[in-house]
Each structure stands twice: as C-alpha cells, then as structure tokens.
Image (cartoon, rainbow, N blue to C red):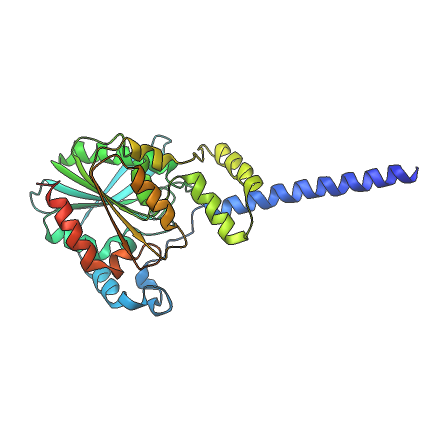
Amino acid sequence: MQEWQIVVIVLSGLILFFIISYWISMHFLFKIMFKRMKKEVLLTDIDLSKTHYKPFMNMVIKNMNIFSMIPYYKVSITSLDGLKLYGRYYENGDSKKTLVFFHGYHADPLNNVNTPGLKFLKDGYNLLLITERAHGNSEGKYITFGVKESEDAILWLDFLNKEYSPEDIVLWGVSMGCATIEMVSDKLPINVKALILDCGFTGAYEEVYYSIQRRLRIKPRLTMVFMSLYAKIHGFTLEKSKAKNALRNCHTPSFFIHGKNDVLVPLSMGNENYNACGAKKEQVTIDASHAVSIYVGYDEIMKKLDAFLSECVK
C-alpha cells in the first residue's frame, strides 16, 4: 500500500469519526434540552435562600402552602397525538369567569402562579391550572417549546367551554407557557377576554438558538440543523417566530410582563412580541430576572393588571 493511500484512509477515518461523534453529541444535546425531567421540583422542596427567590421566599412558601390546602378537581384531556394531559380545576362558587394558567419550561404550575393565583380566587375567578405535556403527571417524553403545547391549549379551552361554560376566560402564561398562548393568540374562542403574557419568546427556533448560544458561546447555525431534524423525527417543527407572527393577528387585549434582567428569555424578545401584537395592549417591565417579575413588582403589576382587566372582564 502506497503512502498516499494510507493518508487517505487515515483522513477518511478521522472524518467519519468526527461525523459520528458530532451526530451523537447533537442527539445528546437534543435530549438535554427537550426531554422531560424525572420530576419537576417544587419551590417548597428547595432552599430558596440560595436562589433568586430569596427576597420574597417567605411570601412564596406561605402562598404555596395555602394553595396546597385548597380543594380542586383533577381534570384531563387527550392530546391530538394521544397523550393524557392533566390539570387542576379550582371551582369558585357559581362564578362565570375563569383564569387558565400555563406554566413554564421544567416548572410546576404552583411554582409560577401561587401568589397571583390566590388573588384571582379572592377576586371571584375559577382557576384551571394546566400541567403541560412532559411535565408532572401529564404524559409525553419531549417538551416542544410551545409547538405542541399550543395545540394542547386549544383542546383545554374546548374542554373548559364544554364542561363549565364560562362567560369570560383570562389566559395567563409564564415563559414557555406564555409563548404557548401567544402561538395560538390568533385563533382563540370569543369568550377569551384577555391575555397575561409573562416573559414569552418569539418562537421555538429562536429560543432554542438563543439558549444554545448562551450556554455554549457559539453561533449554533449547524447545531440548529440537527436540532430541527431531531424535532421533526419526534413529530414537531421548530418554527421561526411562531408566537410573534400569531400576535400580529391577535384581537384579544394583551397585558405583557417582562424582567429587564432576564437572561433566559431576553427582554428584546418580549419587546418584539409586544410591538407585533395587533390587539389592545399594555406592557410592564420590571427590574427582575426570569419569571419572577410578578414577585419583584407584585404591587405595581397587580394595580395595572386590575385596571386592564376591569375593561375586559365583567
């Protein structure tokens, strides 16, 4: 065998090794980002003094404990792809207005809604807290960053209208739950009277791109080719700007919330969504990190939100 043939064989082996290794690493990265956790961690199960919840941890723990004592109905739907999805319905007398809450990525509903949820109960709302696919006791192996979750959201609203017939519905979403609502904001039932949109991203593609770039300090253009391919293999598409584009045709009054110091979903994405929204809208930005604006700026936000909702809900 000649020397050049040996060089070709060695180089070919190295190239093949690189391709296989890169493919395996991309598959591993996809699972890290999209596969469900074994168990979502409740805020009451961790030492909040070591987290960004520290300044308001007493309020959070107190209200989560109160919530845990409130009776609710365990409700469920079946998704279009056959998953059993669960939620908690808190009935508030004969009230005809309902708040539906969509939680964030790797979160539990009570982690996000404990304090404002109690206020909505006091204000006479029923509550429907969704446990999204691949979280908690809902089925599903993979989180889809709002793509499939937004399809589920429409099914949840169909269920709510058929089973409880509310006259007024308010939707509240945080982070991925916010993007979930935004992605279907152009096709909501007429009795959805207002949206509360807390730190949502513009689209699944953009958020995955941003997250990889932030973590790995690279421009993940090639990586996104593999992420998009693996997503399609698992039955969904990482669409660009799906939330922002839907908001252009939204006609439901929308109240936007975002933290100025958010590094997980940057304020720039929240501003893009706000500017794109075609409905009556208001935006509040707070000196806060990701998904904690409602605690940091609770009094300011709730005062403005109460005024906003008074014009939308009976």
